Image (cartoon, rainbow over all chains, first blue to last red; front, side):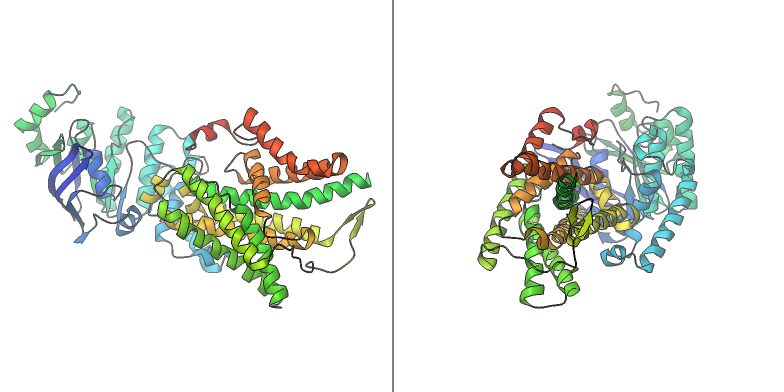
Length: 256
Length: 294
């Protein structure tokens, strides 16, 4: 579904990513792990079109997307969430989801401006769909509250909800468990599996919480200082000498 | 009492125009953080184009009005395409200076095409002024206030009730998230220029029969409208509407009770006082102002 080929990205003199290649199969949960500064978020930014890679290519469903703008990539079916939640803060929870459905709308300025029946009907449909999504992510009771007033756990849920609203076939999650407590994290892992199994969404997950990663991933890519260190199933990764060394060299608390 | 009412009505008329200019500022500011100092020229172009279509070309009223609004919208679009888009990645202050340059160029073109004479055309409806407690209120004044309120409601509905409006608002609130959610932010920026130009044109069309219109009215309108916008707290639609009316009324009271020469100073003094003591605006919140990019 997603081919990453020889991706290299420089920031000034710093090589953030060097010659990264891997392949994500349809219908799986692929985790990208690695110490801080390994280039995980940079890679997500390249896939979602925020950065253009200096070398290499990204192909999604056979189409090259590495020089495409983010909104077109979203239209093609890739959606994402951010490490630091990016919501439309002073809009309501429901509106946040509705904006997510904007790219699936057809009514233009003319139809909206004059409140043509086609535009109103479309908006009612969007509202209905958005309410279903709220139900699905369990935030219906918050529908009319401002997004900025939600606690972090619900903010993350809402961000995922907005991403689902764009009807993606590939969803990129950037540290969805950060800031969550243990109960919320296990909720989240259940929820991510549900997205894969019920909605048939392929997921790329960047995460530091190793328990979550080992629990739900079908396949793992390990990055270290911008380089590919290893790739394999959770089992293989846990027994990989290089990975253990890289992590033991870090002060980070991870239980492999 | 009758004198006071007379000043109040004339203040409401000019206030309505300032409110529309202030709203125009907000539409662009919300989408881009740019303060478009050519906003006043949009009002002038609206009025002069209306004159051109209705008096010079002798077209019917409604067709002239639609053409005047559309042509001003087109100028807004060209402005964004030719002067803002090419320097998109650059410094905000530079962009604001570009809008000043655009305003000067537009004024030059207007002077070239229309000369320095003031223009006017017949009010929307003929008829005697209305008497209220000894004060006269022209029918056109009611048109100006009515149209202003109508468009304010329309803009409010657009941003809150339509998908396109929500998408535009989303761009303003969080451009990064908007892009990733599949919104073409560039298109929205262009749209904000078109919308705000059309907004200005409507104000110009409505007010020209009362105040007349000449090529160099723009900068003063921009200053007053800007004052309305910062009084309301930049980026807040309702605030700028209230601000516009307050400035209009204060101006007309100053002209009436103190001296007509002191009229233009009112807005400037208000700007200074607000910037000194309450930079977030009377209706604005400090946190939101701090969160803004500048």
